[in-house]
Image 1 (cartoon, rainbow, N blue to C red):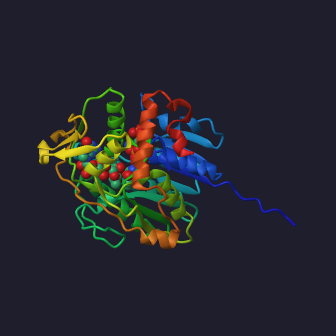
Image 2: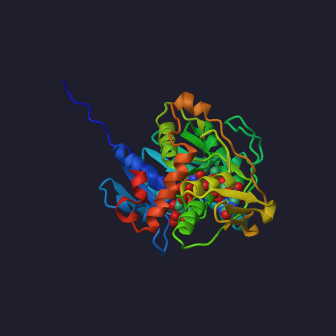
Image 3: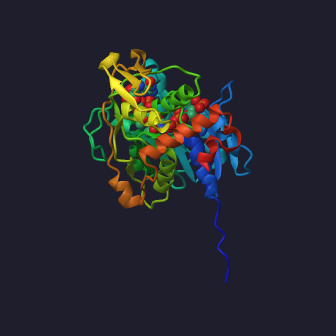
Length: 358
Ligand code: NDP
Ligand code: GDR
């Protein structure tokens, strides 16, 4: 009886230094893939999240910027990947109001540059493509949002992601490319960027507990999001590319919680019960036991336009991919808070954030 030699799959991940890129890299390396990560050149260190996998023999880094189509084309030609996960983006919604043209260039045209490289290199039949689409494309459409919900983005970020979504579909429908959009709702982890609200909250709560910060200054407390754990969501990305046919899928936990709920849950994890007093810009979160003000609203964190409620319906992914999120809202808050507490205690070096990625 002969042995069947299985070819090692080669994945290319853009945005490899980000939250999802780092977690997906670890996930694919565990699956036996060879991983090529595209990294933005920076004169400050941007490899903290991937430091634990830098010396793995199946992990390779390359410099690339999605605004540079020639370089993307050269890299695709050299690497000849089986799977491409396009995770690179200017991913901050509020920042996109300040740099709308750059956001469109990276998040919109950047995707076109990859798709055109695939087409002109005659790789259409050989490669599978994943596009990191976003629930921000639904914007003001009423929840629950699924694959059939009309899009109505409310930010330059959402509008650029919508272009990327449609151009991905266009290349699928026009050239038969195996290209799928994952329409992902908010997903977080201990390696979430510090500017996003969940990580900002858990870092602040840990710092307040350690006596290193007095108060958490926050924006819109009423905004509601469908938060899941990024580890679950990167598995969903991989599942999409393992299907015979490409398609578009929502990944979501299916529950919406307000920013206020997240703050309350984080303080509860450290044994502090908050009372909320006042409204709008005057609202305060107060420690029930001591009367100390721990949370205040600061208008600088508001956006010119807000997406009020995102709550996803991921039934299609449940049925067709067999995908289900495993981590609850409470467990997510606890894990993020514990990781930030460990950082402050200086315990993260051995068992730190990348543990979550393993
Ligand atoms: P991050 O912001 O953590 O990571 C984004 C990555 O893109 C970083 O590695 C960044 O590099 C890189 N990047 C930025 N600009 C460029 C550029 N011009 N060329 C090449 N690379 C660039 O995002 P996440 O990991 O959270 O998200 C991954 C993707 O999924 C993004 O496209 C995001 O828009 C999308 N998404 C995320 C969701 C979430 O809840 N996390 C939900 C839905 C969609 P550097 O670190 O050096 O800046
Ligand atoms: P979002 O995430 O805009 O949903 O985009 P973010 O965590 O930035 O905001 C979530 C909600 O919290 C409100 N908010 C604050 N946000 C930040 N960043 N800082 C604050 O102080 C603050 N106070 C209140 C926001 O107004 C918003 O309503 C994320 C990104 O990962 C995108 O790339 C991704 O596409 C979407 O999630 C789905």
